Every structure is written in C-alpha cells, then in structure tokens.
Amino acid sequence: QVQLVESGGGLVQAGGSLRLSCAASGRTFSSLVMAWFRQAPGKERESVVRISWGGGSTYYADSVKGRFTTSRDNAKNTVYLQMNSLKPEDTAVYYCAAKESIAGKYDYWGQGTQVTVSS
Image (cartoon, rainbow, N blue to C red; front, side):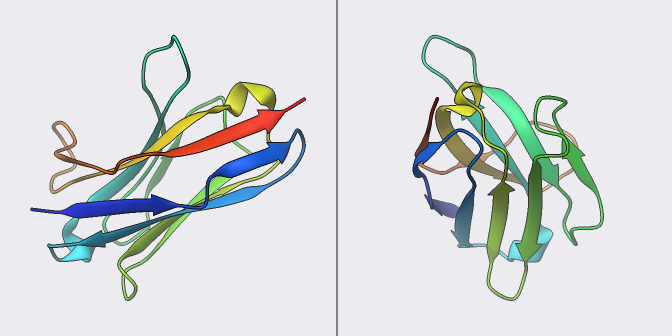
C-alpha cells in the first residue's frame, strides 16, 4: 500500500506561481511511476504530468507544456509540480497518483489539493 499526501495548493493571481509537493510512504518510492492529475468543477479528471521512476522520462499535457515542470527526489520520497505563468483555467483540485508499472492504471491517489487562479 502507498500513501500519498499533497501540499502546496492555494490561491494565486494569474501569472503567478505555485509549487505542489506529494510525499509518498509505504513502498520503495523509486519503484513508482508518479503523476499529477487535476479536476476542475464540472469537468473530467485529466492527466497533467507523469514522471518515470528515476525522473529521466516525463510527459506533459499540451495545456501545461512550457509552464509546468515536474521533478522527484527519491531520497525524500517526494514528487514536485512547479507551476508558473498560471492561468484561471488551471484552477482545479490537483491529485498526486502512483503506480508500479509504466502501463496500466494508477493504483494510489492522494486526497487532492485545491489550486485557485484568480484573473
């Protein structure tokens, strides 16, 4: 079992920045593929970023490319999401997720952290 705890959400003006953190416990962190998803009110949950076990491979949704950066510190069992040039449409609950294989669904989810971007 893996426990994920997100932090770092909040209210920011458009053009501002936030950094989300997700602390993992319960499994060897370096064996986990980590990802961030988000869900805005009335919309389906969407994938934002994914980062491989060692951090060498990343995926970014087109909507966040060039603005968001993900990284991981396997020594601290933590994955980060640096969000710059935030837009009102980035407003959502952001969820950290983990899985043990590159294929398949995400098995573990955090409780989510709210990000609100005001115009």
